Length: 239
Image (cartoon, rainbow, N blue to C red; front, side, top):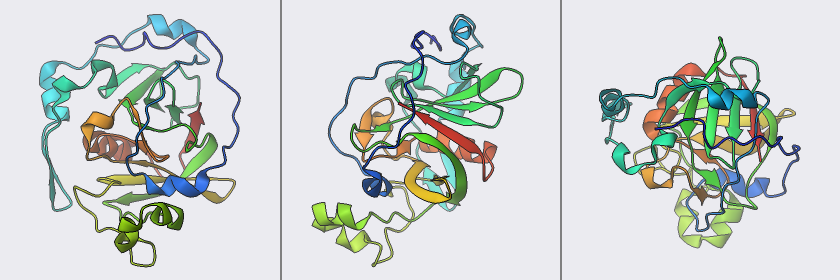
């Protein structure tokens, strides 16, 4: 379970806002899975440093069933997921300040920078090309078991979603809700980016590009992240 081999020595690409923000709040599965190209961080020397990976016993607890908010989240068959996408503490490669969330889109990782030179790393599913947002923002709002309200543009493309439209109040929270157990809402420049970090009922999507724009984590992982991250936490999304 090597943790840092996917990080290369190339510099981050410059940040710029893409144009499909209106589709981001959908966060529903789509087809397409572009090949990830790893990008480097400010501390590339740390790619050679490691923190002990979680043991099988720890993984069984981390990804076991959870009763939360009146719902029983099923266990994750973590043995069927690439081990590099397991939640684990790593040497921080980002160089960002403690408390910052960094989404490494090409490598399908989310880092929460911690004091002392380490970070919590989570495997994520990423929005397919053309529906991604990148830049600097803050976690303006957090929600347990959120309602899913696909934007009108998505409803227009998929009329079967009209019953979950904004006008109809969205989809009830639950295990089948595309936002999962938690959602973290990203604002930039005082505006809602329509970009979310959220839970995920489909463990098969981790490490892939399958959503309409948002960053999805295993439900067990988004609960862990939610408990660690306060409102107004800074976030950087890298392409």
